[in-house]
Amino acid sequence: MTPDSFRTVRLTTILALLILTIGLVPLHVARAEYGDVVINNYSDEAGMRPVVFPHWFHRIRFRCKVCHADLGFKFQAGGNEIDMLKIIDGEYCGACHNGDIAWSVENCDLCHSGSTGSATQVHESTLQKLVSPGGSGAVK
Amino acid sequence: MNRGSHVLRENHVILIIMALGILLVSIAVVFWTFSDAQAADPNAFNRLMQPPSKRNPPPSQDGIHDPQGPGAAALQPPKESFSKLPGGKSGNYVDWVKALDESKIQPRYDRLDPEAKPIVMDLNIVREVKGSMPDVVYPHKQHTEWLDCSNCHPAIFLPQKGANNISMAAILLGEKCGVCHGKVAFPVSECRRCHSKTKDKTAAASSNTRQVEKQAK
Image (tube, rainbow over all chains, first blue to last red):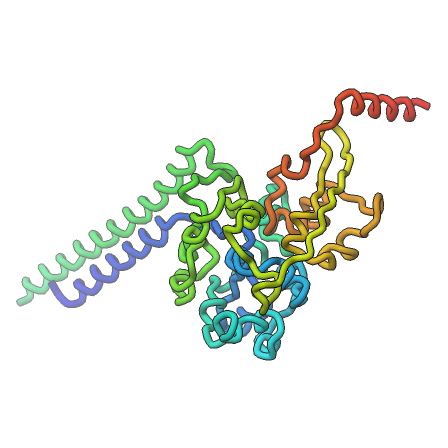
């Protein structure tokens, strides 16, 4: 066998395997936890993964009132225009994520853990589940 | 020498044809699997039901975390903490109100003070609804365990009898009760948890009759 034909065979085999793996991976379905919020106001633009906020994890530790009354989080996904400047100044997430109450801001990847390109939304919400148009991934 | 290179070239051609064959077969396999999966499952259209085993998946498999990122692997899988909490019918499949009542969870009422106690108000509001659906009983008690008055009043609900026009359409679109129910609090599919006060059948019938009479006039 010449090195040339060897290369051709190797390339085609890799290509075939690639098609098989990409093609046979099941269609991407989000089965996020109820109440998980993806926040992607600025992340994509800044080349960071979007933030996934798990409501379930936080409600085990704090009542709704702490964030939604004391810290001023509006009841709207993406409606709070949170950026890193506000966080390092102790606003919003920064009120707890300061290394004192919860992990501090240098653990970027723990919050910025979403898939790139995911839209800002509340997962598994009623709006998402409406079958009629407007029901898929509507914001709010 | 000449003959040798000829054989080599022939080998080369055969190999390329074989490789192309493999390529075509793999494309066909992918295509066939998809068309077959579509045809074989008569319930494929809009299939929402998922088996209990698929509920509360770990972050790396939930479709919104990036499985390649370092975060997905480091975060706590929901099942790990839900297994110790009372089960629910939908949403997170956790009965959060019960979990709080039974002190299975002790969420803080204040960011810093673990001893802070909520200001609980025990007042039920009954809302009479149209049709055969049972009336709605709204318990302030369970809501004030979690929330502050200012979370709902006056922006979402005016604290005044008869001043709030609430409809299921608004709730489904994320307004009124739907600001939380259908997003974090139990979903609207759990009808009976709100529509919990069965109407007196004769009273319901007579009120309908009165309406009809009014319209006739």
